[in-house]
Image (cartoon, helix red, strand yellow):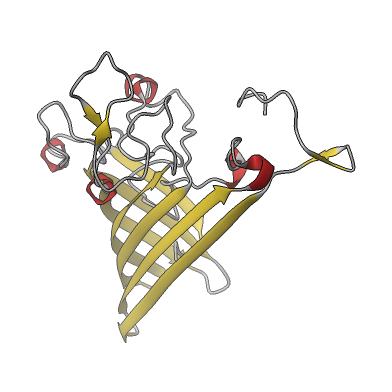
Length: 234
């Protein structure tokens, strides 16, 4: 509430603060097994959260909002790095290795596709394609371009006449690809995935969203996002 400039909060029994919100998540998953050594798995998931009642003007608590990026999401981006929408965090761009990512939103849409195969013994591999993003349901003046929209809207600042922000949210889907190695020890799986960005949620100064032209010259230290986790991503 302090962040939202709310000086008062509703409390349960005058001691426990709480919020009113609705949170829904849904996913479709399928795994095609060709033989004992290879399969293709895919997932399509979406989530939405919206406040109501006395929390309507405060919003959904940050810990209950959605984020994108990380080992179980769009693996080319780090946890909470992606989005919301086409918002560009200038601090993140200037200091990508020193600033913790904190982006979250009210709506999430993601898809994942993996080709899984055996390498030898307990070692398995995967080639994957991930896509998705998060958005806010309402306009956020501190994160222009973050709102879930079908088309662009006029810039809220009158000092930018004729300019627009946002646009069709489907054109703000980010995509990444990569390769993963998994150790299958029957009772648990150790997974190491390397993701690289393919499609940015926002265009560069030349209006281009594709990042594949930057792949040339990338090193394992620069441009690749590493993910270490236990279990399959989906």
